[in-house]
Image 1: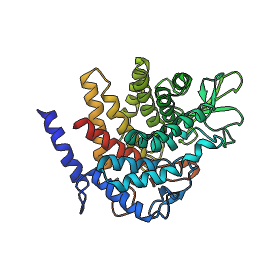
Image 2: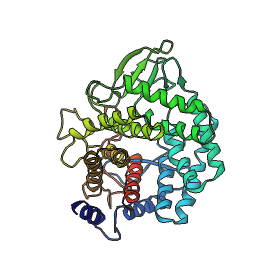
Image 3: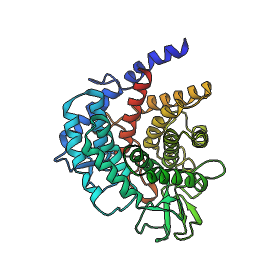
Length: 391
């Protein structure tokens, strides 16, 4: 009875958290905010990335930016939610801007973020065969970065500070881009794309984590022998700290790998990296940007990590055979969404994004306590996943 009552009340709670004129619930709120953003974009190739703390204008980037696919993905999600043609049209127009990525030299591993989150959602919702061709080409491009001696995809095929170029570097974010390879292998691509994705996940599982299942951001390997040389946390507080977004990439990534492989090893590992994250969260379940920053509780939060984790937990909870643990994961996701949907984290009238208080690259001074497009994307994705689960 209590479970039924909670499920019945959650939309009301989310609606109350979003209380403001014309904001009936969190999804309607997202559509309202995105409508304001859409009205400000001068052209489809003007791609919103972030809004600095205290500012109102989006920083715009071009199609080569690693975040370039998230706005198109948001438009597709809003089309899925609303059925309104304007979102489909906006998604098509902005998505077309990204297609040249499949015809240019690969500059990093982010083709999954750029094209699966955008064109992938477009194909899922329309079945457009041209989108299928784009995705297959993108997967083949991403696969060119695979080093069989190492067993992972090279993340940055260029000089990056601290990465000892030309050594082979692999970052935790890359787990998210494996979904493109799995999709391609199921939709007419080569079998080797599946094998590359599994190899990358297996090698990452072996080398990217400390004994307590917290993750490093980057592992450096010998390019020729594949030997692990060192592990660092490029965007976190320190090499031995748990960078919040990196851990959220791991939670989401290994959950997705289990979905694609049905290998219980990955399901077990997804739970281990999830549990250490959940055990150290503050009361509102929105993490500080790094769990080990000595400035806590005065350190910046990272709403983007919470949004990624909430979306992942809704999926992960559906795979868990132990009912109490499954309910716990789902409840945590719902609590995260309730926090993100409250006045403390929604942007509302302060700017046109969905969320405040995300942190991009604090050690580099970039996008600290800002609104960031990928936080909005995964927040919207999590809300849609929750809606589907409960309908």
